[in-house]
Amino acid sequence: MANRNINSTNPPVDAMVEAISAPPGFFGWRVVAAAFTVAVFGWGTGFYGPPVYLEVVHQTRGWSIALISGAVTLHFLVGLALIPNLPGLYRRLGLPIVTFAGGVVMAIGVLGWALASTPWQLYAAAFLSGIGWSVLGAVAINAVVSPWFAAKRPLALGVAFNGGSVGGVIFSPLWVALIDAIGFPAAALVVSAGMLVTLGVLTVFVLSQTPEGLNQAPDGAPFTAPVLLVGAPVETVAPSVPLRLFHDRAFLTLCIGMTLALFAQTGLVAQLVSVLAPALGRQGAGLAAGASGVAAVVGRLAVGWRASGTSNWRAIASYSLVAQALGCVVLLVAGSTPAFLVIGVVLFGLGVGNAISVPPVIANLEFSKEDAARAVALIVAISQGAYAIAPAVFGLFRELWSDQIIFIASVAIQVAAIVAYRLGGGRTSPPRTAIN
Image (cartoon, rainbow, N blue to C red; front, side, top):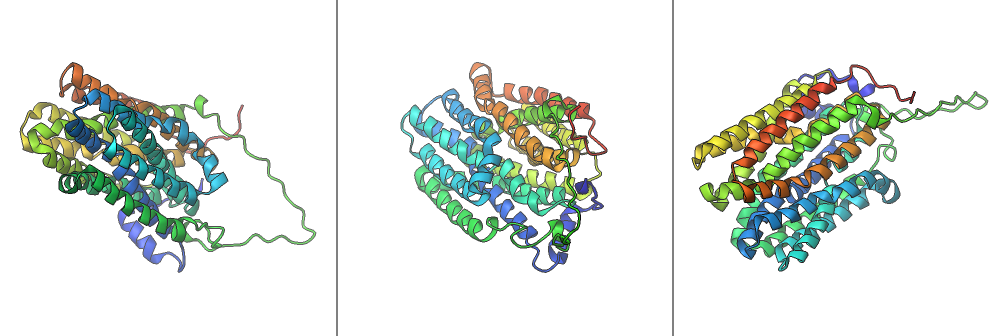
C-alpha cells in the first residue's frame, strides 16, 4: 500500500515543511487546515460542549444528573444510525453540503439545549445536536482529508484531528465564560453564528474542491493524465472483493479497543465539569477541562514527534490509555485538593486526542484504501453507539454510589481496551481483499 511508505520521524515539523515545500498550487494542506477547523467546532460543540451543558442545565433547571445524562446519551446514540450512512450521503449530496447541513442542525440543537424548559424539549435538542456531532466528527475529518493524501495520509489526518483537541482547549472554558457573562441562550447563539459563518466560508472556498477538479495528484505529486492510444488494447482489472471485516481479527480488535477506550473517556468527560465543580468551582472546572484539551494536543504532538507509518500504532494507542488510567488513579485519590485534581485531569487528557485519532490511522495502515473507508465508518459508528450510553451509565453510578466510582470504572475499561489493542497484533502487509 502506498500509504505505508512514510519515512518521516518528525511529523509535526514535517507537516510545516510539507505545507511550505509542496508544489505550487497543491491544495491538500489547505484542505487539512479546513478539516482542522471543522474539528474545532465539531468537538467544541459536540464533544466538549455536553459536559458543560449538563452542569448548566442541572443548576438552572434543577433536573437530576441521571435525567440530563440520558439526554447526553441520546446525543451520542444518534450516530449509531447516521454514521454508517454518511458515505452514501456524501455520494448523493456531496461532502460540502452534508458538512454545512450538519453545522446548521448542530446550531439548532445547541440552542435547544439552552432554551429547553421541559425534559422532552431537552431530549429533542439532544437528538438534533447528536446529528450535528455525527456529521462534524471523525468520519467527516477522514472523508475531507483522505482524497488528497496517500503516503502522507497518517500525517495529514493527525494534523487535522488536532483540531478536536484544540476545540477542547478553546470551548471548555469559553462555554463557561460566555454562559456566566451573557447566559446560556445568548452564548449558544454567539457560538452557533460563528460556527455557521466559518463553515459557510470553508464550504464555498475549500470543501467544494476535489483533487480531480483541480487536476492534482495525492500528496502534491505531479499530476499525470491517463493517456489512451488509439488501437491499443484496453486492459481490464478484476474488481477486488471487499474484506469481510466482521470476520477479520485486526478489525474486530481495533473496533473493540476503540469502543472501550471511548466508552471510558466519554463517560468521564461528560461528568468531569460536574464532578470537579464542588472543589474548583464551575469556572475552575471549565478551565480544568480546557487543560485536558491542552494536554490532548500535547499528547497527540508527542505521538507525532516520534511516530511514523512504520511505527506500532496499536502500542501507541495502548500507551495513551496507560496515561489516562494513571490520570484516573490520581483523580481517585486527589480528594478535594485542587493541585492533584488538575494533575489527574492533565494525565487523563494526554490520551484524549489519541483515543479517537489513532484508530483511523491504524485502519488506513492495516487495510486497503477501499476497506479502510468502510472500516473507519464502522468503527466510529459502533464505538459511538456503545459510548453513547456511557454518560447515562456514569451518571447512574454517581447517583447510586459516589463520584469516585466513575474513576474506578474508567480504569477497568481502559485496561480492557489495552488488551484488545494488543491482541490485534497489527499487520505488516496489506490484507487480501478476496473472500475465501
